[in-house]
Structures are given as structure tokens and as C-alpha cells.
Image (cartoon, rainbow, N blue to C red):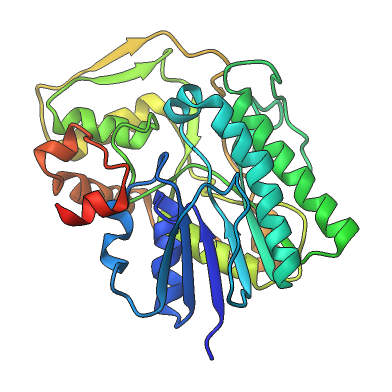
Length: 330
């Protein structure tokens, strides 16, 4: 009998790709989501898959599953600034209560669990690039703190369950990731830029654009997650692409990709506590996972732009479907 994987946040950008990956590996997948930020379209193609079962559920409430579970991937969480500034309480609840419930389920099922943390635990870093043993520079009461501290708490709670209950845990710290199925209106730079150029709008750069980011393609992240899941390493591991670029230079790349000479770059004030530099030190992932990114930014951006170009005009305006049944009926 094939192994069973439960994925919380399965209708999200990353969660839906993980569902595809593990179904392709022959596993049974139980997907859990409440669509607070997830999109039913991301898992619509799995509706009739014989090894996929969907549970519409908010993981901040207790979840009961009858069948045995071998692995849990806890990826439920708002993950973009627009989302977690709009729903700050829900963001903290899923990091705290949601993580508590998923760890409790892992304990009850004797399952291995991986929790999704983030590069945001490093805050506006004073160390560059950021290794896992850097404790970060986080404002605990700033507007971004609801996400930063939710993920820092998630890590602390996971290690407490590991140390006290002996739960088999993994922690992945995810750096900026992009690819098909991202939401155009989620506030992150790649969908924001691509949405603007597809609507014929100028690109908005915050500050002077000197702040840096590093972007990894979704396929590289999924491969890193699977490698980490099958090691015996319990402490956090960075998974990201160390190829760093300034936001201004990145905006120029998007304009070149769009091929519209009429579009320009416009500048707006930098949001509060926006990190100046963000780049992973992936020495640990290289050492224990023998992992590093394979997909170039040029290749990944072309795939992502093709996906966004294929959206309908309604989708470009980001009409959201909050109910899976309503979406399927369309």
C-alpha cells in the first residue's frame, strides 16, 4: 500500500505543486485548505484523482483523520504582505494554533512532519547572506511582525514537540519562490510586476530599488523540500537561490521580458521594515542535501510569464473564488 501524505495549505501556490509532486511519486495525498488565501483553481485538476482526497478545513481548529498518515507538510499560512497585513490575526493563529494542531496530529499518527518557515525569520538582516545560525533582526511590533513572529513561533513550537515528545520533525526556511499558480494580487514582486506589464501599467518600484532579493523557481524548492523530508536533520535549513539581484535591475529584466517599450519604472516610498537585503546562505543544504538550484532566472521567469499570459481577463483582475464547489461548477 502506498504511503499517505497530508498537506495543509494544499490550494496555495507551493502546496498545490507539492500535491502534484507526491501524487506523481505514487503517494496518497490528503489536501487540507480553507481557501482564505488558497485558490481552488490550483487543485481543480486533482478533483477526480484516485489518490487525492480534499478536506475543506481551517487548521486552527482540530482536524480528525481516520486513515494512517506517514507524512505531514504544514504549509498553511498567508505568505504575502498584502495577505498578512489584511488578515493579521488569522496569520498569527495559523502559525500558532494551526502548527499546534498539525504537530498534535503528527504525534497521534506517529507521522514525520515538515513545517514551512520563511526567510522572514531573519527580518531586516545585519548578516549577509543569511545562514541558519543567524538569529535575525526582527521588529516584534512592526506591521510585518504578525508573519515574522508567527513563523518564529512555529519553529520554536516544532522544536519543543521534537525535544519533548520525540516527534520526527523538519523545518524548511523558504526564500523567495516563484512560478505558475502564484496570485497576481498577492503583493510579492514577481506577480506584481508581471500583472502590471500584462495590464499595460508602469512598474512600481518601492524606494530607490537598491534593495535586493534572490528568487528560486518552484521546481527547485519542491526538490529541496523532498530531499530535506528524507534526511534525519531536525534543525532549520535554508532553501533558496543565492543569485542576488536589486529590485531595480529586476524590474528592468521584467520590462525586457514583456517587450513593451512604452512601459516605464515609477518609484514609490519604501514600506516600513522592508528588508534591504535578502539572500540565503545555502551551504548547509549543499552539505546535507547535496542540493542547489538548477533553474536559471531567465528560464523560470519565461515559464511564469507564459502562465500569467494565459490567464483570462477576469483572472487578471483577480476575481477570487473562495469556495471549491462554486469554482468547480463554473
